[in-house]
Amino acid sequence: MLREAAALLTRRATASMDEIAKAAGIGRATLHRHFAGRDALVRALEDLGIRKFGEALDAARIEEGDAAGAVRRLIDEAEPVAGMLAFLFTENQLYENGANEGWNRLDARVHELFRRGQEEGAFRLDLTPAWLTEALYGLIGTGAWAVQDRRVAAKDMPRMVAELLLGGAGRRTDAERRMKR
Amino acid sequence: MLREAAALLTRRATASMDEIAKAAGIGRATLHRHFAGRDALVRALEDLGIRKFGEALDAARIEEGDAAGAVRRLIDEAEPVAGMLAFLFTENQLYENGANEGWNRLDARVHELFRRGQEEGAFRLDLTPAWLTEALYGLIGTGAWAVQDRRVAAKDMPRMVAELLLGGAGRRTDAERRMKR
DNA sequence: CCCGAATGAGACTTTGATGTCTCATCCGGG
DNA sequence: CCCGGATGAGACATCAAAGTCTCATTCGGG
Image (cartoon, rainbow over all chains, first blue to last red; front, side):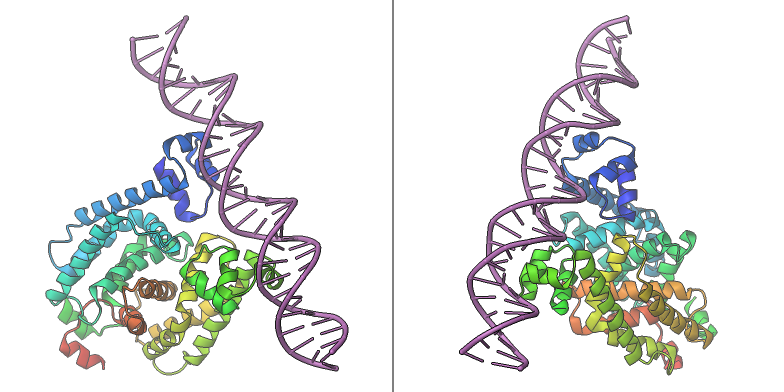
């Protein structure tokens, strides 16, 4: 049920409770029996998103191996929940309510990943971990939208996000690439 | 007046007409006299955003010089309207109404810039111009939000966006950098 | 100074969504 | 087969925001 709601809200963040109920194939009353109101529903979705993204962080084992590889794995693992993350990311902007505490822990883990990457010499020092964290979320969200609007093929999304985030648009010469790999 | 409305909606995309009017220092009635309704206001803002971003494209002279420099100039020029772009970018997602025709022309110009960069060998070929265009918008929006939440200093924003978009997070060796510059 | 247009304030209506309630129906366990 | 809990449908009340209207006031050009 939550899954259906998430899928719809991902596409249309302003869907009414009525639409959500229909999309989930249940009556509006039943929806209200499970979630006190729209706020409660969104909060439940937020919890779900936090849990899912936390699981993605675990599954990607971001503490292991080289930082760049860890980022790639994280993006791969987060891909299935990218749409929900996009929704929650903007939701947090729209309503300036204090962000759910759960995000802080996740943010800290991502933050730490980028910091570690800098320490290990894998990432540039002139971009702060805080910005890299934001950029990761932003690009995942942008990617999810681009897929929804069919501007990018779904299967390419994680690679596009990872390549841009890690390598940027600038082209490296063959010599540069050889040195890197 | 539009400017005040834009400033507020940039911060709180869900502000009511009442709040907007107060923020602009005018009465609700007057606001309605100028814009038939919220939709009309948003559409006017969209037109303004399109015009401003178009001017940024002009001012950056994106057709001239090397593509990477053009992208940097574009981001610099777009910085003052970054908040509004962030608002309009998400608004276009929220309400899946057919995107304003005006965007298409701007998209095409940005698209062409990235395509030219690829042709000239400045940009990678494995990231499509369409994706680079989306990523540019997404990163500008993410940057605007990060500044608003004080996660990134305002003066650093254009550099952070440009550096990440063009160079990515990955670090280049001194040798690599020397070859590039 | 005078007049007309525009404004601000606020009362009022309308609208769309939310939340509550009732009741007939359905379904699974005993 | 029967019963109790959960469901779907829909009526109803509530509420916030949107939109409309009036009227006194203000402002600027003539």
